[in-house]
Length: 146
Image (cartoon, rainbow, N blue to C red):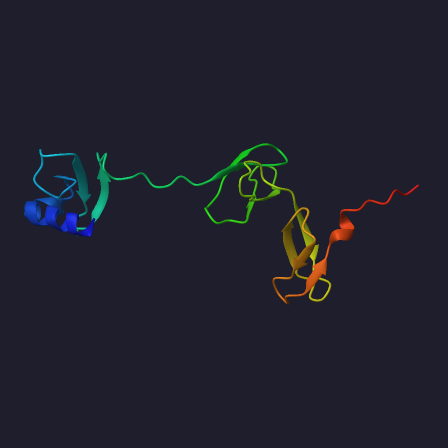
């Protein structure tokens, strides 16, 4: 893109620096050969935007999941482990291969009292602060009280 932009800047001289749209094709050649790409330059010579290109791949879409509590569709950054619903404020665990967010649990470390978030069903939780590993399987068993 830098090389293509510089060849366009060289081809138009000072006219492109006035903030006008400058046209080039995908190879950086003169307009009219292949797919036209339009650059909009700022007065300082930097390229502001690119339009009209079928040859430039669109940016990858962010992944999405549905909130497990209120069924709202949520968009999140790739690589995120948890997503908080903007509507109901529920934390959703990002689970590969599943379009619905997973339930989560919040565990306080018994050593340093740090709050640790983990997907529901996790047997052990390692504290992010002091690295203490806690067994949390007891929260999944329910005892019937009369």
